View 1: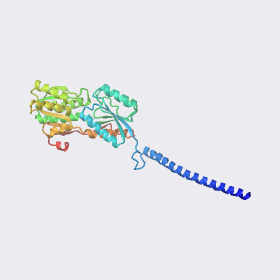
View 2 (view 1 turned 180 degrees about the vertical axis):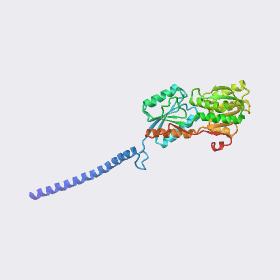
View 3 (view 1 turned 90 degrees about the horizontal axis):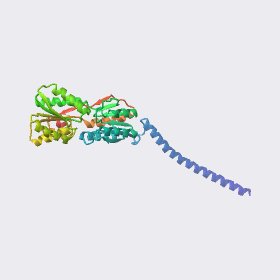
View 4 (view 1 turned 180 degrees about the horizontal axis):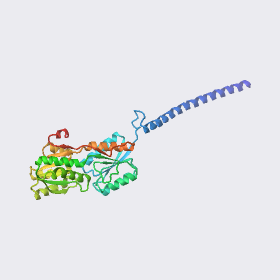
Length: 341
């Protein structure tokens, strides 16, 4: 009996050893799983501190950035959004685009929408210098970083403006027209949307460099075509009947310049100088072909990418100058090949 009991004890001891070994193996597997979790936590921590594995493509945080735009019916604004989207992809950010369709109230409501979505930053491409200003107050009250792009508001409580000095484009346009007209002639002005920051400042620059400087250059008529090609064409058709003495048309953007060009070409007039601003592909092509006298290039691709970089930088606590400006470039037949491929 003692022998039997002894064997039972020995068998129990062996069984206990096997169980312990199995548990040890299970712990080893659990340790391996814990190591994965720990690695994940370490990666998160590294990501938060700017570290992490170089192969961790998803270690960078993803930001949600809202863009309240003036209107996607404009080729120039579409190019702005495309540039922002491209840079957003590079920076692992989601871009939420709102189209105000050139309506102030739409834009204000859309900014409220972005605030309610608790986006990490907002890029505002303002419809109106004064009318879009309340959006600035609302964004700042919500504690959200605000970048103004291309256009700006009367309320300067935004973090950073990314764009150009639009008065400079008006000045360049005036200098080009003065040269083409040899300092004398009759000019008609196609204005952008009245109250828009670019309409105000481009007009001021044109006045300063052309009408104030050359007394023999006369502004014989002006009218808003709201940045729109079709409106500009209809207005120009009317002008050609009412003001046959027109020597030049100054258009505050290229969409309007192209509309004016359509009307002038349809009339058979070849003596009217047309100058636009923005450097959209259609305008550059027309300059290259000798149909449009000139445009002033606004590098919207660079501005859009920079606006996105600044928005992400603000989220991450970086500091920037109040205004990040990109230079305009006057484009004539002499240098258009550098910019139109």
